[in-house]
Amino acid sequence: MKKLLRIDEVMTTLPYSVSKIYELIKEGKLIAACPNGVGKKPIFITSESLEAYVERIVVHPDEWKDPELSRDKRKVINKG
Image 1 (cartoon, helix red, strand yellow):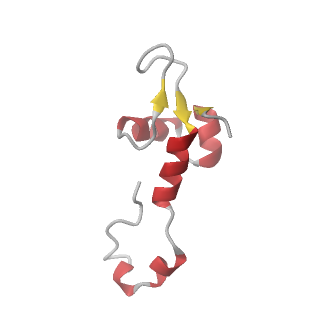
Image 2: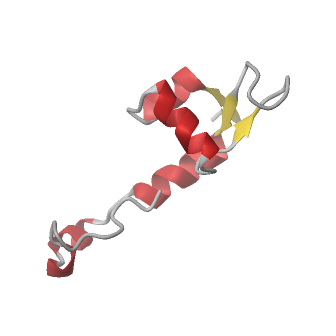
């Protein structure tokens, strides 16, 4: 896998809008690389941070079976 991904490449892994991806960058959930300075294009996402984000939001099937995670009690399903 490439080390740096364009926003459109990230969108093939995460079905999010461009604005949501920028939000994840601002929140520190995805790490951006900006060769021309912060916020200046081109903006890339590190593949390592994308993989880590996906790992954080994955919910194990057994967690869905746990009654403590019923809809009204679910606190942190999306850990990202």
